Amino acid sequence: MLRVYNTLTRKKEAFQTIEPGIVRMYVCGPTVYDKAHVGHAMSALVFDIVRRYLEYRGYDVRFVMNFTDVDDKIIARANEKGVDPFDLAEGYIRDFEEHLADLNILPATSNPRATQTMEQIQDMVRGLIEKGYAYESNGDVYFRVTKDADYGKLSGRKLEDMQAGARIAVDEQKENPMDFALWKAAKPGEPAWDSPWGKGRPGWHIECSAMNLHELGETIDIHGGGNDLIFPHHENEIAQSECYTGKLFARYWMHNGMLQLSGEKMSKSVGNLVTIEEFLSEHEGDVMRMLVLNGNYRSPLAFTDESIAAAERGLERIKSGLRPAAPNAAGAATDALTAQAESTKTAFLEAMDDDFNTAGALGYLFELVRAINTARDAGATDEQLQPAQDTLRELTGVLGLRLEEKQGSGDADKFIDLLVEVRSEARKQKLWALSDLIRDKLAELGVTIEDNKDGTSWRWG
RNA sequence: GGCGACGUGGCCAAGUUGGUAAGGCAAGGGUCUGCAAAACCCUGAUCACGGGUUCGAGUCCCGUCGUCGCCUCCA
Image (cartoon, rainbow, N blue to C red; front, side):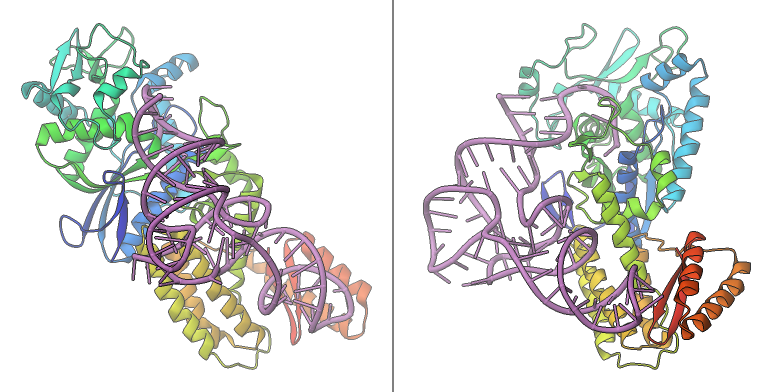
């Protein structure tokens, strides 16, 4: 039985979908006004892992992730650079999708954009006005928070408390300082759409509500995003959607923790960021995924040289389990290996069922790796290793790890075989200097040589 | 100030309904090896602190300290 931590109730709950076998899932994507950083990657990876596991468990997952492609920051950045805001957004969307692919993140079922949801957004705003949940004010439209008795239920806030906080600027346009914009009147030169309230554009929160309704229906199963979105973004989404439809908006709210760089949340404003582009220029996508898997998705995740190195080494270790039998393997007893493969799978599923406990699940995978390596050392053949390695492949695949061994061009292989053979001959004659020379030179070319009891094997990397 | 999360060996981190602590990285020792690499074996924590409940608590309750997030845009 899968259990999921629900931000709404602050508890792990049994996971049950609205419709059997189908999961309707929405994750808030980025506002595309700049290059995405590894914090965005973390969020995308977390929900990719959730999605993959749900699919592995047999669900048909309708996975929607939006792009906010029109907003203040995009307009400001476009003006700064003297480019068209739509072109700017388009470019960053393309970059982001490329990064997702590099990180082995499955494509969403749908990637709606604010600019392509204008009709549904306006319908919703109009409906909220009609029901008295919103009001127009000089071309802006605001949501009337005091009209929503449930306002604050996700973030655990009370309107009175928030107003006491004194951080909220009083705005003459609004009835209440906590009211938020559904529609913003356009200033001269800004991108704008015609509407019943004059030319303008949507507020940030309304697009997600409209997309959810349009893409997935009135009530969805899972709504995800970074925990920095809980308030106000998700709170406001709930308010808009539930006041508009009168139905529960989302059953399970999942939030990932923030990536920490030097002890602080990675963000533009702090300026402590590493872009996905930068990260991927130095590491393969699996490394970032490994980093995420080794932690708890709801907790802050430390992004340090040390944690990256540990993730990299851990990956190597898992890959070691997938390597072929030793040359001339004579065979070995594999009862223990078979048993370990089975118990690993059971334990893995249990861990993942417990709110996607990837760190625990990884721990069990390492146990299987050790069992495979032990069997190999004992002389197990490829045929004997294969079932356990298949299990390892299957389960790491659920986590989205690629575990690709580095490859050279196929043409080189037979020459390397030849060199290794020559070296073996040299070793027989105890020509150590020559043997080491061959090994060192091959290493420079990215080929690792390993001398075993019964022969020598080599691999790229 | 308000709301929330968290504090387990050097680092990351797991820990089902409470019964004496997975795993990874790093470190040290060992096996294997001509040497090396990889792999394998061995070594280390009483769980922030102080109370309480209990036969028994990392695991429940209270308090203290600390860290992080949100309260403005944010994955």
